[in-house]
Image (cartoon, rainbow, N blue to C red; front, top):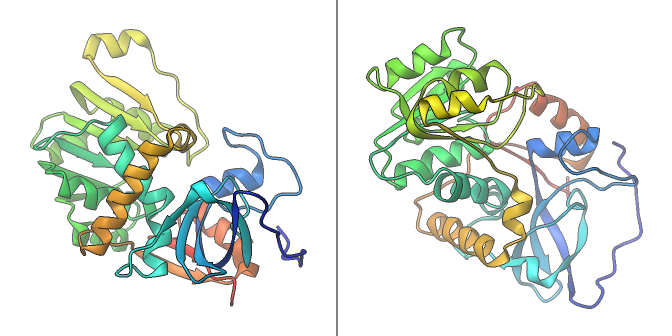
Length: 302
């Protein structure tokens, strides 16, 4: 990635020019810039799928876009603009877009979590995970088990409402999860690492338990045998944000729900750092190496 000057975008019919105040960085961005994600990318590419800022007439707005958010300004389709409540600051709002919507959707829509159920959340100190811990707690989860790779990250998850925090890199992860749930298999797992962690979490699922996979951070894909699923009555469910955005009303409901919760003080974004656009390549390296906590932001004014 290179920081360059381009002509200012011009809003066309049905679009609004937004002066970007904050851009969110997501793990999917690291896939996009390497062109190894689910959707193929083409050059030239301005990365970034979420932004907050002001319109020319002064409205504070947020938006999820296909790309183009790593910039000082963006022409955004009007149907993608969401008003930001006055009680929610820009840094909080941008972290609630993709990752807040993801946390809400994987628990409510894909995972179908019910009050009293046990939930395992991978990368629980990250942008999505830290919000998923809070959403699961607000939905009445019976036991929230957070997975994180360092003691500092595990302490953060506990402060957000997790009941137990486990080392995500443990060689006995399956047994650790069962022990953290009183020796019983768990009901819901939110998994985004892939590889061995996926296998361990799958084997910790109870009958009729649901594992929702929403990332492949290890870049190790897994193969699931139908016999295993039938034998244990387990479900593996994939989640990709694109399909939620293809149902605008469903996505809008989720965004309104998480922004409303933030306005009431019930949900907060853990901001792990704010960087200038020029540092985006290093931010991607740090994110891929799991050296970050919480939501990482870019500030085009720096």
